[in-house]
Picture 1: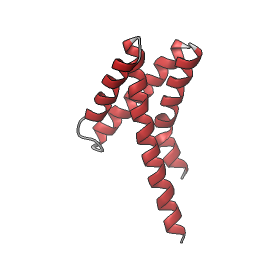
Picture 2: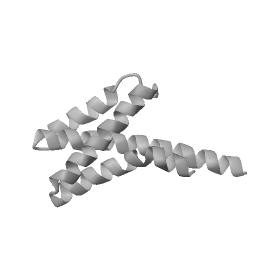
Picture 3: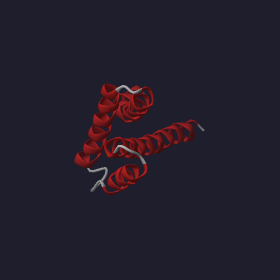
Length: 102
């Protein structure tokens, strides 16, 4: 279980840094969060878990259209997609642990 958190910690920390940086006006935290989200997406593509970043791009473009300035919207959209991926992985991990115990 600990190794799972080590490998998925960036996916959890990235969106939190983006939200914290955007909410409290800390650009360094926002940029670090976006960088972690980009790294998570890159690693997912490099490992073969995803073939193309289509949904990440869709979320980024939607964020650009909804939030000003555009780069904040793109970062928020990417963070949203990363958070959805993390929650999907977390739910899968937790459910597999739950069902293996019964």
